[in-house]
Length: 274
Image (cartoon, rainbow, N blue to C red; front, side, top):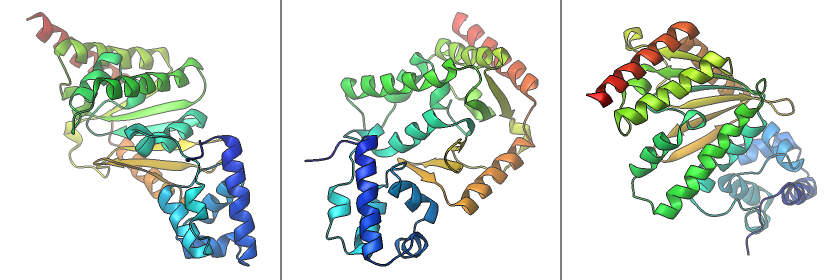
């Protein structure tokens, strides 16, 4: 029977990992090299602050010759697509003090309205049941509670112009979605920069979310086709941060971006009326 993920379960798992590592006569650094993981990540697992992925657990189990214990007793986040792909990133998102996100095609989840999110789930392939989409919708809308605190986290968005121009659902859905983003930007709760088509080719080619914390090193979360991965190697994270800053240099100002977002929203409104 799977062990439900919880702070207590992670702490017990971390203690077990530490005990087996020390019994093997390995330092955290030596284990990190053999398991192809960062020493920092192993330290956080042993302290109960982080949960390893299934692949991490398999590598740790192999290196420490634990006979499958570190896989069988890995705390489970439960079933479902969101749990498999995004659970760790969602948890970190709620703990972050600063988030900087680049979106190349679609409005990022934290900013999505209910109607926009429904259209995204409706287009999912393979198709999902109504129950699945409703569960994901609840999770997605709940994420926006990070905006309840006006000061933390500090959130920046770098949006490719395609995010504004790509119709998702009806013109009314797009109009409401863009006005929602503009309202958050004008209130000062978020900072928005649009990377215009006129900027041409740029260094970012996929979704990336950079996060900073009070009690953890910064991380990067990247997404591809049906994949999502938390990156925590300091060198890799710094590279992602540098790519973000490089692209940000080609983007429009916050005020200019809000003006464009409202202008495109007006276009959708006119299209709906006509």
